[in-house]
Length: 218
Image (cartoon, rainbow, N blue to C red; front, side, top):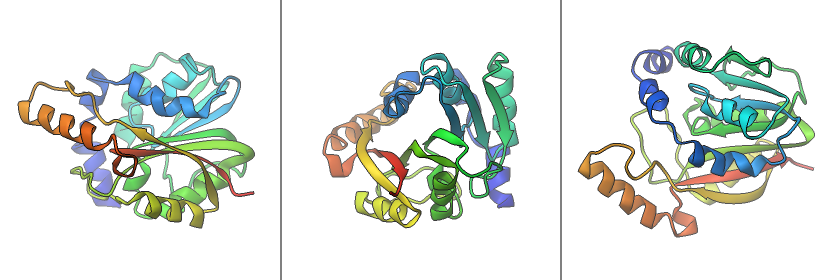
């Protein structure tokens, strides 16, 4: 855990996240939680807070909490985002959320739960804090996607569904995340790789990342 915290507080590319956000990519996943207006919203693994802010500005959520393991990320989110009554920033562990049962109508997690030391526990916590009629979205990588982060669970579509089901959640719908913008930076090899992955991801089982719309098992 200390190694992971050191990585996210000292090495992770938060500056790039701040300088080159991709709000349309985020909204492609976030919009699956509509209607958002008037809801209580948790951004689980919020990073520098783009999804949290988007849920308020475009979605109209009533109250939003951005929670991240990294104190550096939360500090940057609070510095970047003008203070709003609807948003609170919290440093916390996604495997032991500091909230009561059935606290949130909507829970969103983009590219974070696969980095939890115990992925199933992360999903169990999502189920616990969701209201009975609430909805969650998690965006997680296919089996062939790899980053430089110290902990990373990658899986097939059926593998992710099994983990989600074990945690007391059910899959309402599965969508696909197309991946980073093709011209996120000007490195030719990176551009070529993103183009290749975008083409591969047109096949549903080989999507770059899965967008799971979830609810508590009934």
